[in-house]
Length: 266
Length: 266
Image (cartoon, chains in turn cyan, green):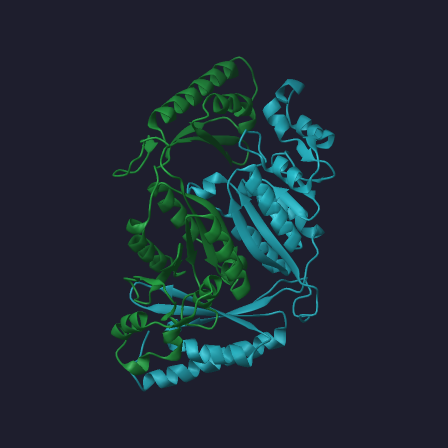
């Protein structure tokens, strides 16, 4: 089975401009191990489906300097940067201010964001200072809609600032996705391999060398007593992918034949 | 309930030297979203229990330049760097060579590592070129034992290079852990809060300001129609922690009393 995405220019070859991205996760709770980050994996899978190469993930603490440094390093390097976390109403939510600092622009309560929040609360008095923190938007940024709980994210330059709560992040991302420039989708096919990497490694390297228009990854699973492996062949070109997969299957058939004639395993 | 770790110098105060760490995850499969990284979360939780501050997580692709750059950036900045992934026997396993390049040292099949692998296979002939890739160790590195599948990791300088398969990584880490310098453990206590962050944010900021010897984090959960929040108070000092927690509880009691008198909710 070829994993791909309908409706894209999948298989059109590798000529398209490469679109790259980084995910920046802001949160002490991830670094302490208290919370497992699921947002970066969610974004990774979505970007892959869109033909955008996620090239780096960073997790940094709730510290202004660290966020500023990471935002500036990543936005200079990649087409897009997606941040998650730190845009709520509490004192430890400092991402918006840090992103403004990274861009060297001012930040204040934004009338558009304030108006959105106002529709969400019964009275003006409910717009407490804490809640109004969620309306702090860097100068020049566009809002990112939050269909679930109203408080918006924002885009400034190539940096998309989203909430950390997974459901809200996902809703924000789905709003952003249609606006992103996408590349040719990387097609991939997975071949299950009953052997460990030590058994196939030499032959697999030869297959990779003979098929430079594919990228072949090898992902071992250790089942307590022995390894099995998933061999993932990737290419932006459907025919190259098919050739690579056929070569991997032929390699496994050869190893199986040789295996019958010996006791080698692992 | 105070989360802490028996047998450490927990609660001894914050005087100890701060021990910091970074995790560097090497793997295209994480960046493509194919595989969810669990190793960084596992290491994060273990380091927190040991009083080591995990200060950054980076995920980079299977590309030598990117690994070299990340290793050098992180090892200059933190007490320890833990890498996972890319030390198996296949062509895409390039972490050992990249780490050698980062340190500017040579790398070759290491006699100690080769001897370990030899005990694992029936014959010399089983030590294929692919398997011998797993014995490539940078000059001057110490081996990290792999009690599960033999092929070792290694330490060079302050960089610990471990396998990407979670069970093997965990076994390697447990071997390393007793050798690490540890700090005072950060104690934490979690207070469940039935309100959203917008309701508590202003008061919580005041509590944080009044208790600078604690770090108070606020972690919202969105349950489809409303938010609840977990308030986590952290300190290396047990008494400071207790004071901070008491202040958070008092704050919640006040909000609950006010809530009875109004219809406000998040």
